[in-house]
Image 1 (spheres, rainbow, N blue to C red):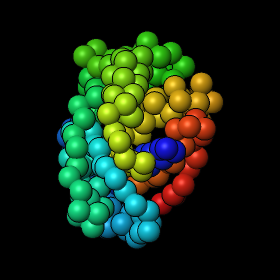
Image 2: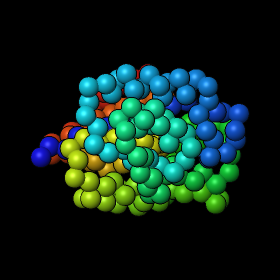
Image 3: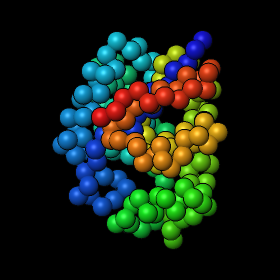
Length: 182
């Protein structure tokens, strides 16, 4: 059986909420609805999500149309920054240059790797369906993609990710490809 995973980076978050738990914005909710059209004709067997509101809200319309429950996986969560940063891309660049770099109370990309890679492997080992959707976050998905591509997916590719974004991964071929660009 050939397994295909659709990795969905969440739609546009509400940037007025200065918290990791920010929900989708109005624009984000419309983007989530448009994802349903993109997935039309694709037979989805299961949907998994990070526990954060914005990732769940991104796939709620798809789950409704596909008549599937969203399975929450704690290990798919975004990394903890530790404190709010105003210049996100400078901070992110430092993390990508040094996978051990972190702010006080935050997680390094190595920490993210230690929870997202095993969580993804658990999903693959337990899921019997052929087509899986995983809703997650830019940084944590990028770190997973970095592992899946033996480092080919790196900071430059991370910076090109949009909200929402969809990547396909053919498990048997270990092939990751951008499939949807908002």
